Image (cartoon, rainbow over all chains, first blue to last red; front, side, top):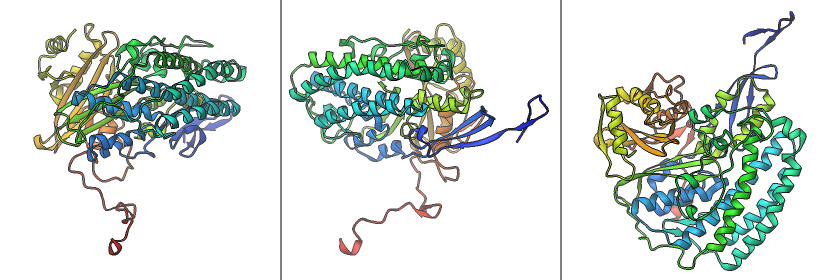
Amino acid sequence: MSEVSTGTGLHTEDMTLNVGPQHPSTHGVLRFVVKTDGEVINEAIPDVGYLHRSIEKIGEKCTWHGYVPYTDRADYLAAMFANQGFCMAAERLGNVEVPPRGEYCRVIACELNRVASHLIAVGTFGQDIGAITPFLHALRERESINDLMEEICGARLTYNYLRIGGVGYDIKPETCGRIAAFLDHFEPIVDEYNRLLSNNKIFIERLANVAVISKEDALQYNLVGPNLRASGVQWDIRRDIPYSVYPELDFEVPVGQGERGTQGDSYDRYYVRIRELLESCRILRQCLDKMPDGPALAKVARKFKPPAGETYVRIEAPRGDMGYYVVSDGSEYPYRVRIRTGSFTAMSIIDKISPGIMVADLIALIASLDVDAPEIDR
Amino acid sequence: MTAKEIYERVRELCPDGVGGFDEEVPEPFFKVEPARIQEVCKALRDDDALKFHVLSDLTAVDLPKENVIQVVYHLYSYDSRQQIVVKVDVDRDAARIATVEDVWKVANWFEREVFDLFGVLFEGHSDLRRILLPEDWVGYPLRKDFVEQEEYDGISTERAPLVPENLR
């Protein structure tokens, strides 16, 4: 322990503090070793790997179709996106064309999932800061989405809904009606969150100007998704490297504007997510209107053997650019599956941002990055 | 700028050690000698025509038949909306390559992960420790010839069969 002079004759000592792995704010199992001088952090070293389930290795042992349920577990708060990344990679390798209705079903399921995931992000954000009520409000709405998901695919968390070549089950017209009814109910609720949380003075004081991430740092550490956009880079895979049916849809890409303080502070990262909730609703409405008739699943061989080759697929998951690097050697099993996730790179920036902030602000920083332990460790 | 033009620009900037360009695949790539990777990556990031400010992904693929581990860099440029893939073949028995941590900070964690799962040593890395696996883990699981230990910390890694053998 090093001694630090306070200049008043008193002397203080650096303190080493263990945060986690079982800490409510770590959203999973995640540990930090924090060196502090009183309340101020000198260094925070993340320690990850508690949730490592070797999903990449399992991919080498499963058939192409058989691996889809495992991808769910890569990020269980946004399982649909993990499905989609892998299915798109397999389709690209095997030259499979997804029927238009299948693509629309995918986008509807994914955007519902994005709303659910962002609700968790926003809700737990409040909880980490000390406001329990917004968490309950957010989970109440998420419950409705879970019901809709159950209706679509039979599962509430790890969906296994997408197949290589489309989706497992078509979305029925009555379900479409219920999704529309949910949107009518949900859109005004976002305003309720704003009144409850976003405009709350204590909440703003806790987040504005805290843990600012500059544009340069965001690029150096390859932040993706809402975290990157909060730092002022207008970049969204859905718009900029379009896939699926996103080019046919009209939506905005919200960027952090220094709403209540500096651009790229914790509040911006929070508020970008609130605005994305509404954009997702907009996408959902358009999808429900435009959905064509036809089959939802292409004919794909049971023994799917894509020709040898490799591909790198990017999709916009709730935690940003999710990359699937898949190598095929022409056999029934993938040769290598690599999942590159947004939380992993978001965690690596904590080392850089944390010196000089308060211990309580570290919690705000973790919450604002919306890291998800299973996605870091895979 | 096509992948071919990117490749030619890189060859202009770093004439040595760049070779093996393939544009017949969906994601065109070129190969780089292990000793030259830092130099090539700096050129890719700093050159005004290239501007690859982002390292999207850094991973590896084990190819035991060729006796190499292929380290794969996926680079992206937000300015020109271009992707390029850089591959480096390192010897499987003495897997060593220079770190690119000074070029892109995010490489720090990516390289730790590749070290952890493939056993590739990144020379000059500031903090090369295992990241996902425990520190006392033996072996590198994503290598194709990895054999799981029979037990870890006194706990068997084999699961007892659900139905005992004499009842099957």
